[in-house]
Image (cartoon, rainbow, N blue to C red; front, top):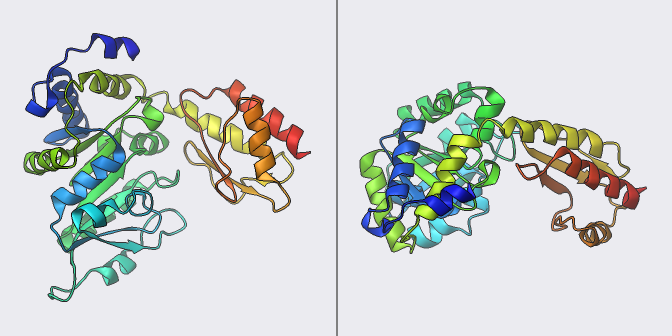
Length: 322
């Protein structure tokens, strides 16, 4: 990947003449079954571009209470797009109930925000939305004249878990984002996918938000390398996450039993008597960094975490918690 970045042919992406960015966008659009693609600096930016391109001021989007573009993106759609989020409680499997969604759609009345978009996330919290559910969501949006968007930050983890080609997921959506970092391992970037008119509007908004980059091919090269070389290995991350969960369940005060590990994310319940500040500092002294910001822990496996790394973590946790 570093060599691909070093060797990347560069131009000015703001003018549309960085050949490596252009190649990534053409490849990504074709690979996922869309007309066009737009390279952006992050998944947060790509989601914001999607919502602002789909909606006007005073419109709203439906999403989950736990959706990243509602909960973890600093309210960008509301602050920068004047777009109202309408969150719906996520079901236990991460899905959204269509009856609850239907009840949240606003009537065509000037008192209300105009409901324009349903935004789903797959995976969400490591949980995989089924292909059958995605088909139902597509039909729901068609029946209610809504646009269906996918926050696909970890969509390749979903495809890997479902053992399907990515197009089996993407075919259901009007637009989607794909994060090139996270599990795919690029240092930066996401792509936004949709039809040509939508992407042209998003490109204009990207410039407005300060997202236009010059010789961005050095970053796009890493993204294309990730898409072409780092997808099949995701199963290793899933296997490692399962192994991590099983090992954690053998440690006093920690448990993953309340959560099903479907992909590469492991949620850990921590008993009340465990001093997480002590554990965090003790691990840091060994060069192992975790956050103690939550009551529990969320551990994510990726290409730079080996089975041996997991064994090292488990060894130290047992030392501090027994």
